[in-house]
Length: 308
Image (cartoon, rainbow, N blue to C red):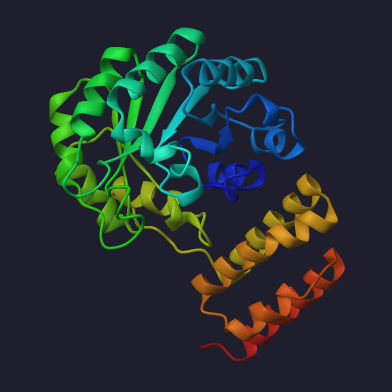
């Protein structure tokens, strides 16, 4: 989740029960390796739990260098991105575009696994398009290469995020290989989580877009899957979560960038709460922490006085 799973958001998701939080994807391009934005993406200072850094690229040796570099910076796990469907990523044959080239996939996996002494995981889609679902072949290559775990998003690259995720391919992969399989795609409720786990038999599920605006979803799913009643967060608790999140963004990025990056998170929180778009629009005009905080408090007060 480029531009989303920074350290403040990873810590927040962990606080609400996420078992593992993966960094934003980091380019293997050595020219970008020490760029400020790249270093921030994989900044783990003060981060609790296992530190997983996702790397992106097409050159096996450069990917191996990127893996070693991030291990030296504190990564506990290296995750290889072969699932991103973004046009600018696939245009350079990276991300899910790699699924077209199985021999290159094998070379990247083997080279990266042999370059580090920490676990290497892989994230893919079910294939390039609906006529070319090769997740099973990629999974077999991954297992033979020493990949520690495989996450599969239930769409092809061509599907992007359109339509519904399918889980039949994930089920087939789980039945065919012995490495842990993690299911991803459209898991947005306890009922959906239970269905995917039972239908596919996978070892775990991964939440992506469903955590936007509701990072407490991890706690909700854990409680529900354990057969416990989940008590939804109160409005006061949600407010506190939002203010804490924003405070961490301001501290992590500085005021100017922190305020700008906070806007999209506020939009997702407001969408989840049902707060009117007009309030979000006003908040997007704020350029300082003080302005954003005042407008946010005003929006909450207005929402309480005139709920939807």
